[in-house]
Length: 295
Image (cartoon, one colour):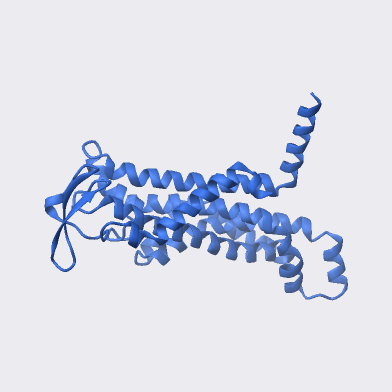
């Protein structure tokens, strides 16, 4: 059913291709992304140059996507940047969903905890996500873990509100009332009876969180408050190339294209899942098809 949706097909195929690129980066990448040679600085895409290996040897090399101002291979750096972006996007989505689900279940099912938890979530949502991320990264040393937590924290209230709204409806269902009457424990009701019925909306929400996380990580790296500059990320590559953008646009163009395609693919997958898993959307499409057939 899902594969009949073109958004799901295209988004899935692009993401599978990106995962393959990320996993095969050591083999697809022509050289180590941290290697540089002063004699090969600012080369255009396709120009030949030289790279000094870790052993001190100088080898001939063709820079497929050009080189940056340090003589590093943009092609290899972009491939390795795919790894970082996908790891950050997936990890942020998992962390935000895990914490948001727990908070949302508690807020929606345990009435006395609702007011306290939701006021905390409202307070977090009142602060722009990028400011929270910058503050969290500033408190701890910039690393992959701190960046993931910094991006995940602003997303937790959104998941919490979604889960809470679903729980408020589901807890009034007859099967939940029957479980309460039978003396089923509260954790079992929340995680065994209510949580499975929130899977579809959470799956869609997870894709949007993943896309936002990939984009925000690039923004933080571009601003210089994300991952350290020595780690090849799309944001770091664009940040280092923005000074010479007019003369050497390839430093920004290639990582920017990869970033745009990745975010677009994840969003397309999310839109397709929403259209497929939402009964109201499905009923609307069926109704439209019936009207078109009888027109």
